[in-house]
Length: 331
Length: 224
Image (cartoon, rainbow over all chains, first blue to last red; front, side, top):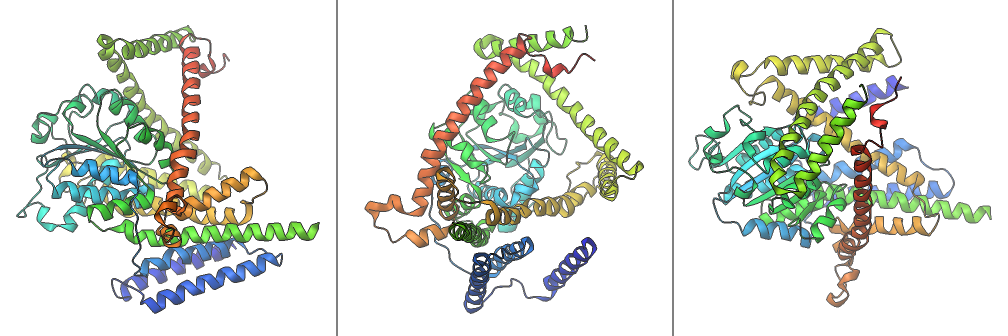
């Protein structure tokens, strides 16, 4: 059985790879096809409902298939979504837009690829906005893969405006307009020591250039030289540690972007005024993209997330209806 | 001696770190002490890597169940380590950054680690849906409140919430699903999170005092 499943999944992967080369780019369904797909998904749920009520709950793999369809197909649909800006995301944008050109911004990338679908769009939108408004960006990571995620956001900004690339007319110069300090182990102790001296934790940047040789870092000694901090976080060490040390002890004005799972834990700091705004999950990223005007992956992914959320709600409802009907019958 | 020295280290470091927060002139002392953590953290990387290697090697050696996966882990571990250590494929050579564009490690990161780990995380959606269908039941009042809150948050975090309830007049806008979601996050969730945070904080204080005073010695392991 295991071998059959492996062969089938391998065939699906190969088929998808072939499709990737053969199908036109970008592949978008017409409104009619989008409607048909949505109706078919609805019909699938109707069948699942009837079967479940009849006491024949569907197999797990059918659930997976329906969720897979609900997640994948919306990527090819062109639907305008009414994105409502939440107060916490507005706060992030208001703070960011109040900064003058040349402001020193510390961006901590405390996440890795698994959380990138939610956090990378925020980071990309931030980087585009920062370059557009001539902020001086100091990037770092308390997670080993963080600095690479930071570099990806720079590349996203380059893709958005090739004029920012090296050797271009409006080049954003590494070391002058932005710098990547890299990763440092030590979790919250890194933040603690940065409060005294950035250089003590990052004697050199990601590319082994000595701290003192980077022009952008010349007058930056600790948090008191930073105008605003933003933390993209997927766990520990992350937003909580930054708030407890950099914000509370060193008065760094800071905003955060968290995964949807982690965001509820950051609300106490937001309401206490320790955090200036919070972007939570894909929805937060989409709102931020809308505010900055840099439409990116989050808005595209939001439709897929909407379908997936509705699918989960329908599964819960079907499961509960069947549960209560069976209970009634037993009585 | 074996137990006295660690107890003394814990007591001294703990006391210095507390004093450094309360007495500003001692702040730098606390920051200097925190360097120990960095050093230990670096060793933890070596220990973690060594432990991973040992466990999987043992599994392969004894041909335990699913030892094939251990082979994949070992090969992945050794290949990544070798490419990273010797900077294989790095356009700037051995002195260049390991994350330089085109370097072997960067290629592994972009082409293997990123898609694989994203896939693993994305699988959660499937398991959540399956678990919701099979197990998430409104069996009692608490479960029903949880279920309704889940619906509001699930819809409120997507544009569908606004599409469904956007017609509600402004004076009753609290009943719009996105606003209800914000209310849940800012009130119910906030109260819960704060109480948890305060509870955890008090627990940490009590536990730290027990460790510093040597009353709790479980972290030293058994005497045997």
